Length: 517
Image 1 (cartoon, rainbow, N blue to C red):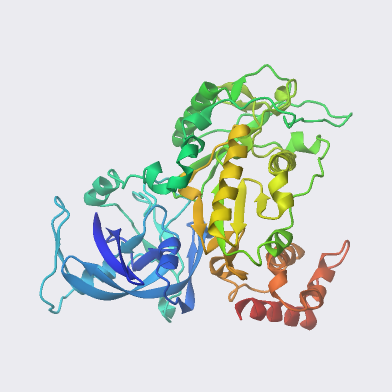
Image 2 (image 1 turned 180 degrees about the horizontal axis):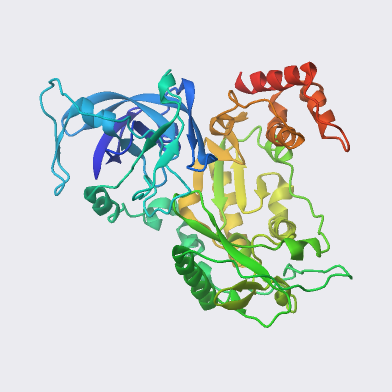
């Protein structure tokens, strides 16, 4: 059940909804809501590790920080320390510890919460509460706790020195009240609330239904150029679970309706399967294009260097961030090349008519397209583009609004649409490409740094590459980075035998310390 709560942001009183969840073992707030508070975050003594049932790390990653705020519920005010984490669609979760502390009377029909006078409560609790939030190995329709019947969820958690909570098992079941509450999700804000008034003439650029059009043919239509010795090959059909079959039918029916795919008689077939999305229980359809990609001539058009993009933002004071809808599906596949990307499902063979994720040259084609249509603005120095992310920046509001209109007009000319819920207009702080950007300052995103403290020394060359991949992304924030990382980079040279020397261990730990400063 969700209840209204209030808290202060500066001089403003903000109201949102909190989920009352007896299955959650703590008090939680989503990262976006925590940033709005403009209050200092407290680093946990020991980060919470969340693992899936198979022992792999959950995509939520680590819970590393908390924030303390004053909350008002009805006529009761309380000071609460909330753990900051990804919560799917939820803003705040008040779990079992909160229910035990206040023991409120809850009318599950009306949603009214009454607080009793404080008194001691004896709770019969035979096991520790659930500290994890998601388990992405389970099918779920909720986004908060997975609907698990008899399966056990295994998580490891370290929080506030509770050494004995190294591993716990729980049976997490949704109560009837939770299921009913989640059937009545808070509706997304209407477009008129998300879009500034001065952009009302461009409301059509934010309409989801209009964005389902079949894209026009352009000079940027995606070509799949094959190597001379390439031979088309067949593939086996991947078996699908009952839920995956339902999702397959939805995917095929929707894309056939849009014209994004069509039945095929191609001699080439790539497998079709599903992977778990970030949202708990959600599935993403994929094609295994490895064979096709190995036989495709590569397009070496570069993606922008993030550091180069960031250098352009140093004097900006106001930002507008735009998120393009449909990404690759905005580009047609070149006529005559569709058969090459055909994929096989239990329902038959289909070929895409628009560019799909997984094709080796899709990023190059898409970045070239975006760079070309927004070239004038990029050259003028007030717009940066990375794939489907567009950032407009200025030092004066009136000029900024004019620039935003120019970009939207260009998107209209090219039949492109935006996701209003992921756009930000005229803000002084934004998160872009893993960087927190404010006037005159760019910093690392704290959520990206979560878990650095407990990152163990690599045991393989692959592990070294993984760490360096992360470190290279933020290298501009580390003084003498090249010199510090040299012992680790030496391990990645061809035919180098893995040997973890004392010098490399020092380099690894010094870099970790630099990131945490």
